[in-house]
Length: 243
Ligand code: BJW
Image 1: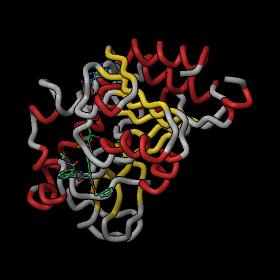
Image 2: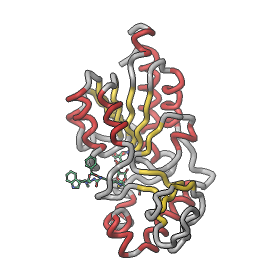
Image 3: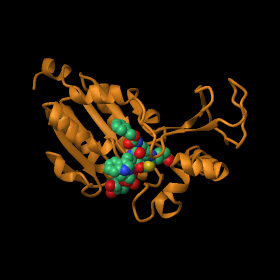
């Protein structure tokens, strides 16, 4: 591949909880994952929030606290992707299902959080969003409209529409490389991105994960191992010789 060609080759990277595991954040569906401790119906659905807003706010407040702990840091996987964005002459977009901010803290700038962001909240009454680093309380007044019954974490629960879908699909359709990192392939629409790419783009597809995901057979290539090892290795290869 010549440098001129590279500048036209865009890369889309889907990330999931597995990339942040070695930074100290739990995945969802591994044996010790979040869903082994709390029921997703209780904390990750609009119905669960309606039933028990305090339990849901407590769940996200404790995850917000954990993200602020001094030992929760970007790892070599996040750092390699930030390096790729800096050094690859074409566009690099990270579409993350994660609500943590470890990609940004590693230096990535082009990041879409399709399932929302832990450090943001929004008002269901007036739709304004706010940066939020502390606890969010039940009956918190909205800083914009003042209503006390609309504030919620800025996250996407089951049954809700993920964010930025038009932009994501448009970018998937013109990419040359689609990488999926640290996601089990259980949750749609993200789990369907690889099939969409294969239908709509002439792209190479690769999964980097600890183990084969639910959608492993849809990828042209796979590298299995911890993200802190396989991601830097593959990024080095791309920058050196392409895919
Ligand atoms: C490592 C590692 C290491 C470990 N290194 N790797 C029937 C069929 C199809 C779809 C549906 C259906 N019924 C309902 C649906 C739709 C539903 C859905 O997909 N349900 C499934 C359960 C079937 N989806 C939705 O409702 C979504 N909305 C929607 O579809 O809207 C309609 C629509 C229509 C048309 C177009 C577009 C939209 C919304 C989904 C919202 C998901 N929300 C959550 C919570 C977010 C907030 C929070 O964080 O609390 O998002 S659930 C949770 O799962 C979270 C994650 O982002 C998401 C994905 O999990 P992820 O990242 O894959 O984690 P794990 O734990 O599953 O996997 C980790 C992987 O890492 C594993 O493979 C490990 O091996 C690996 N790993 N250590 C590398 N060191």
